[in-house]
Image 1 (cartoon, rainbow, N blue to C red):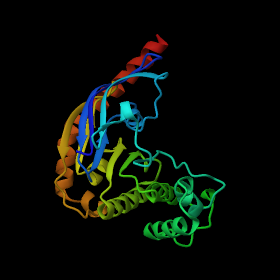
Image 2 (tube, rainbow, N blue to C red):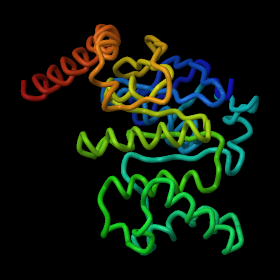
Image 3 (cartoon, rainbow, N blue to C red):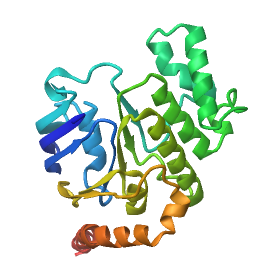
Amino acid sequence: MKISVEGLHLRFHKGVEALRDVSFEVRSGELLAVVGPSGCGKSTMLNVIASLIPPEEAEIRGKIVIDGVDVRQAGTPPGSLGYVFQRDTLFPWRTVIQNVEAGLEIRGTPQVARLKKARSLVDLVGLSGFEHYYPHQISGGMRQRTSLIRTLAYDPQVILMDEPFGALDAQTRMILQGELMRIWAGSRKTIIFVTHDLAEAITLGERVVLFSKRPGTVTQVYDVPFPHPRDPFALRGSPEFADLHAYIWRTLGEEFRAEAEDKGLTARRSTA
């Protein structure tokens, strides 16, 4: 196993319990999708794995092991983990290729070597011709491609992805899903991909982990039997996809309904 999460609990000091007894494993080279209702703790779980939540913000219990190292005790090894956020975090004052070079520049990679690497990645995701454009001059899909290859540039072994396509239109999202699967098939990076979209989780994941409503916990893990390479457009139209989506939705839909009822109850109480 590349990653093992065991009995992870998190309660913010302000009182909200975000995670309760979360346990799952990720195989080396696996693209694992995590899906659940909005606000169920999926992003929080990624932030704990990435050691982004300091002790003064929350009480955290449990174990996270990456390559045999308990990262909550020893810390995440430098450069071993990459993170692609919900929104691109590109530097607005740097061009596309300068953004891709950023991590390599910080690591002290010589200019010729980092430029060669950046150019090859720009070509990989079809951004040739836009190397010298600034983030505000390109589309949201292009910015997300740039964010992805900026992470790939410094060659992390594990990539965490937090709803990176959530703000995009449906067609662009499916195009980038195909790009991600193509890149993953060539690199076999270990990826944890968080989403609230069950169709996206099934399209991408070798397995799908279901989270409950908050406090989030793992309710089910499903194998996705579709072989790679996968064409998102063709796959979505297949009866096998529809059958698996309906099968998983029987469980996940209950969590979405429970979350909606909780929000409705909160609203009624606030006006009572």
